[in-house]
Length: 272
DNA sequence: GCGACAG
DNA sequence: ATCTTGTCGC
Image (tube, rainbow, N blue to C red):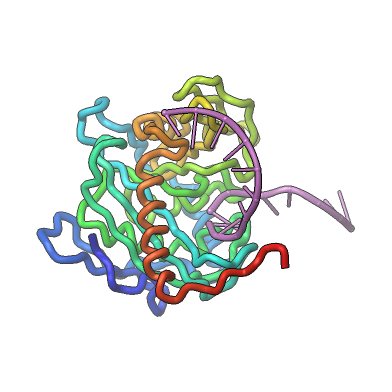
């Protein structure tokens, strides 16, 4: 596991140093992340117009597909859209075959670059997530992001943006769509139903657990809705959340608990 | 004009 | 995202 450096760096440049050990994947430096709303909007429009070579996962289970999930946990206590400078922990985990062993993981402390605003999630947490994926010592085949992809006002949500920046096929998995709509999927794990934005199929509802609400799966960088569903199905485990994303979330929250444990805020009675 | 709106 | 209480099930 790598750690130690701050994920949000000066000048809008992204870098992260990998930890000790034989690094099969080296951090790259010089990746830029938009620093203003107008710059992000412009980049989103540019990326949405590109037509990169479509990617499909090779083979089936056992083909060795390396699926990374990434997640950013913010400090406990604050609610609402938040503010620039909010403390957080960005984590990533690479899972063999989607549900197998974790072959690499990283977690970095970070500072939010902006408050949350629908359509501009990337302004708040994009730079930190990019840095933590870069910090992984194993380069994954595909990236799963807790964000939308083509389901976006400019057709380029954070899942697509991260994949494009990092040159990795990507999909998104969220609790609900941003703009897209669609009928509910069937009751069996793996059942899917299309999510539409205008005339475009931008993702799908996917049932991951027989007793849980479906998740929204999103087409991202070099992936369409069908490919996104195929990747998400390869990540079906015991929980509602696909395994790579769940493991990244556990790592981020565990690191947060460790960091906040020493500086625990006093308990506030919710009735007062 | 008003509300909705990934995390 | 984070906040909560209660409830069900292993």
